[in-house]
Image (tube, rainbow, N blue to C red; front, side):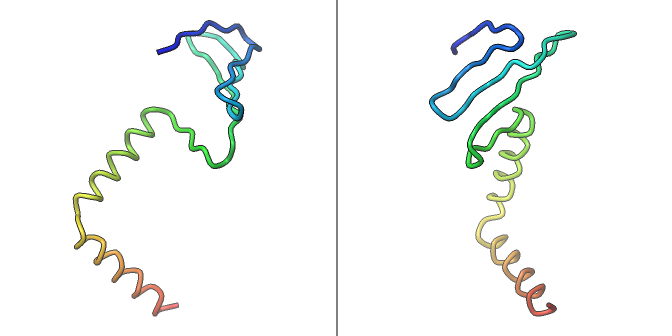
Length: 80
C-alpha cells in the first residue's frame, strides 16, 4: 500500500487518466474530487461490497434463475 500525504488543493495522479483532488479536510474527514474516464466505475468500499455480495447471491441461483429471469422478461415484452 502506498501512503501519501496531501494538503488541501493538492492532487494525486493515477496513471494518465485518473486524478484525485483534495477538496476539503475538516472534522476528521477528507473530501476528494475524482476525475476519471466514464468507463471506470468508482464506488465507496461499502457500496462495492454490497454490489459484489448481491452478484454472488444472484450467481448462486444458477442457470435455473437465469431461465426464470428470461421468462419474466418474455412476458413483459409480450404485454408491450
